[in-house]
Amino acid sequence: MEIPSFVLRQEEYEKILFVLSSLSTRCHAEALYLIHRNGQLIASVGHSPIHDQQSLASLSAGSVAATHGLARLLGESEFSSIYHQGDNRNIHISSVGDRAILLVLLEKSKGSMDESSLRQAKMILMDILKKSWPARADASTATS
Image (cartoon, rainbow, N blue to C red; front, top):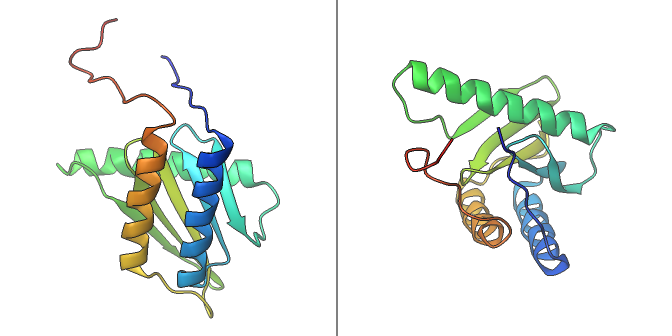
């Protein structure tokens, strides 16, 4: 299995950070993470209480993959988001196109999801990321 690589130019990375920061402000988020579906952390903003952000990225990618498997078992194409509620924090995880994941960490007493801002941010992020790596080959036309 080949893991596709991607390259972010400084300009694209700064745009991603701007989009994440804007969304963080709108949602009063504690932190936001943009994660490649292979589990690599692409970018993060905010004041994360998590010291091992790479583990967070890897576990989030695994959670998305497991949820995708559940969706297929139930005859769904996918479940586009995952929401975890804790005593002190909530986590919202959603797909950004077919290659990335957005994780929003919210303090329960301060943050709330702004769905309109989330959709807008994801569209902008998808546009930025399309330029950073080639489109995924269609599985039916891929050669082995």
